[in-house]
Length: 333
Image 1: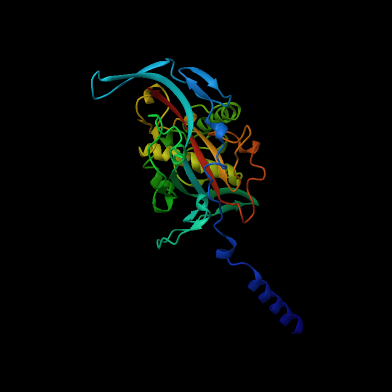
Image 2: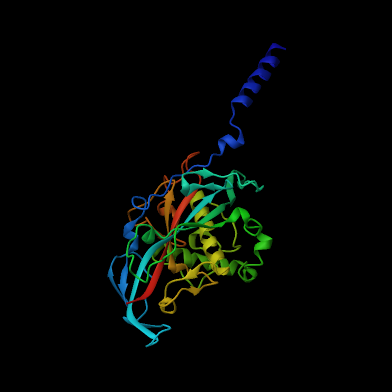
């Protein structure tokens, strides 16, 4: 009886000492400093026409002509300029398993008063296979915030804003409802189509992803469904990147995110319901800001194995933040 009483007492002490789920899962993050947390080398390459004048990071093809012309509403009804190309930090994204956890806003957690299921990672046989993420998409025009190139017509004139919160999107964590956005997914849910993604993985890791393989997320997995349930979860950095790529694709499909590169985008942004993967780069800002080196900003689909070591921190760094860079081609005058 004494042993039984001792076991009950020890069991009770362990139960009281164990952290509650709400205490174990804490919203963490750091504010993104627009000066010190930005990889300024990622603005390159800069190009004039088809010629890159500085920088050696992977860059998609630029328009072939140095001179360009755009229609205007006043005589002579055309504006002649010079074709330029550069990369700009344009969006910021939180990737978190905890609803309403704003990682890039210093780990701010809001009580929205709206019930939303907690996301989680699922395991089978001791190996993790599935993960679900919530994302918060910010408009983050760093050049405008810092008042850089203020007089250039090629720069964004928007201000910082929270543009999209997936907790309020009924499609995000429901793969069946998401089918309404991507009905073409049924064409690519076969071994042959998925096997082609190996080529996209190799291309993205070596240089740039293959835009023609639009259903592939490179080494991260399949772009479909366009939601936060990642069934090919290998590591948290990898699946967080996969959710980020899907978010960019989803916003383009909803005509919220417009294209900014290529000859067709010289005079204005264009709709891209199918994601042009070579137009985007990702730079980690949380839990570790990657501001220099060859893997500071990466093409969509590049293998995270090259740089993910030390980027996921137990308890204090299990949610992620990414800065989204986009390629701009513009007719400057």
